[in-house]
Image (cartoon, rainbow, N blue to C red; front, side, top):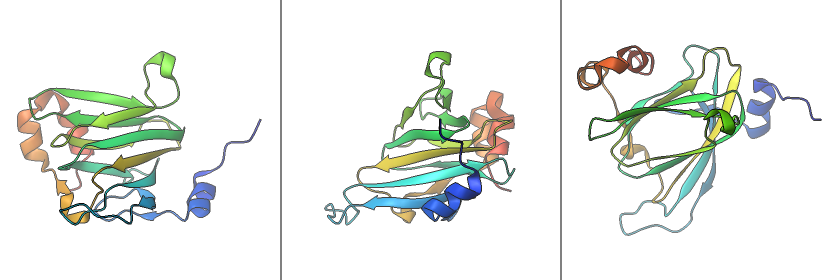
Length: 164
């Protein structure tokens, strides 16, 4: 059986660098050469890693396009979803599918999302795929006060997923 790689080994292997606006490490793995009528790539994909560092998380944000999250390896990742209709869900991405974890999750456009490593983990590696592809102007960061007002029962996690 292969030994588990360290976060540093994966960072070096994939040449992961900090993702702008978030403190996760990432690399873009695909950016379609074709463009849609809006000038965006037809599709793009990335690999990202969150670590046990308290500053390593995906900030609460929303996008105008559906985004597919894929879990690859490491420890479970918590993905908080705050839907436009007022629903919320906490998806746990990981390999324990019989225990309720998921290897894939679709985040519908307009849904607030944020993610972090589940407490006690060392690192989690996931991917994101979008079609049409992501461009930086798509990113709309969330304000903790506004999100907490709408989803008060998720206040602690929302605050943990918004940078001050």
